[in-house]
Length: 253
Image (cartoon, rainbow, N blue to C red; front, side, top):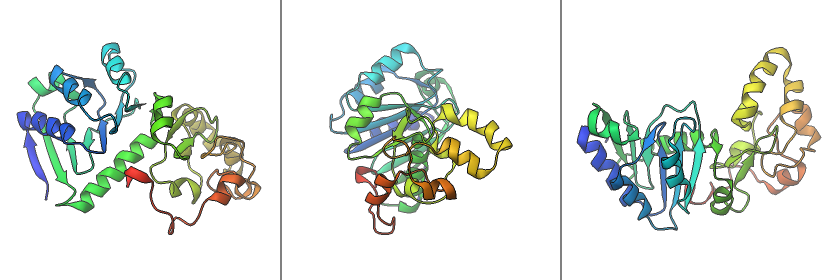
């Protein structure tokens, strides 16, 4: 059952969520301006905790970005289409109208809904799945941290340019099914949308599926190129097993 939070309750609940994190902290907030209290709470987290933070990169202040970027266990994502405000760890998820922004916390009228994994596992899972979907479709701003925290091949590459990477939370979504524009980074998506209107599916895939989404090398899988399915090269494809048998990845379960 969800718990409704109002005004000052939201700030207290967000602080409690952050300080109680044991494994992974997800912060999705278009606008971020941290008070000293929130900076202290985030900085005090154990360095083995992975922190995933998404925001509108064009709107964040340099001072705030520098603070987040200097966190050794943080992976930052930029998404200028972001509107969702979601905060979660391994046990609690909060969906709210409030940004992680000091002015908003002190002056705005906001509402929030809190879900506990033990009490409402279905809604908790759905929020987690959608949150990771947003992160996967955002641009990673801290590539080295991403590679460090998401080892063992858990990094996806843009299937067109292979230069922008993002975390794979559910690997089977990249190995099976029809190719779609979500296999592209945001830079290539803008070009893709016009090309999609003027060309058929085969031509689209040949142009935008030329790189393997798992290793970033050239996609030599001629069967996939001909059928227009997910852009995975032969080498990576041979390593994969049916998603029915493959467990979801690590701490993102």
